[in-house]
Image 1 (cartoon, rainbow, N blue to C red):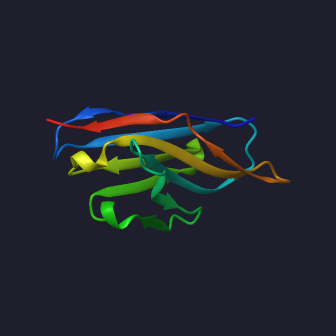
Image 2 (cartoon, one colour):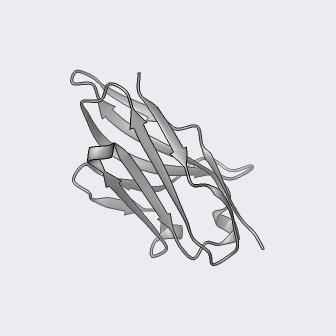
Image 3 (cartoon, helix red, strand yellow):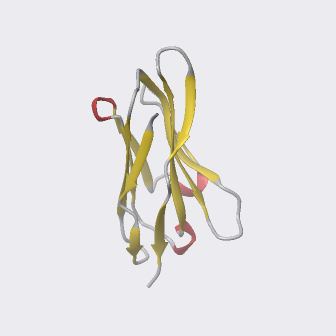
Length: 119
């Protein structure tokens, strides 16, 4: 069974920066898409950024130019560099990875990490 462990959340002032990381451990043959989602209170979970195995990245319009998603395949880790943070970025951020054990594909989620942007 694969587990995702997230880290890097916290409290930051508007205009500040944070970097989230999410490491997968377990029986992994390969990882396809890695991504970050977020859910603010009273809102639906939304895609923030995703990166393919070929390092092609997609971003939500609200974070383009401010956030950067990257991955280290050797470490089974995905990162989210968040710059110029705004109060509306406040949410629980969830890591998502689609991986294969060599036979089947699985969709797995991290436990979530809180990001709060406030002065």
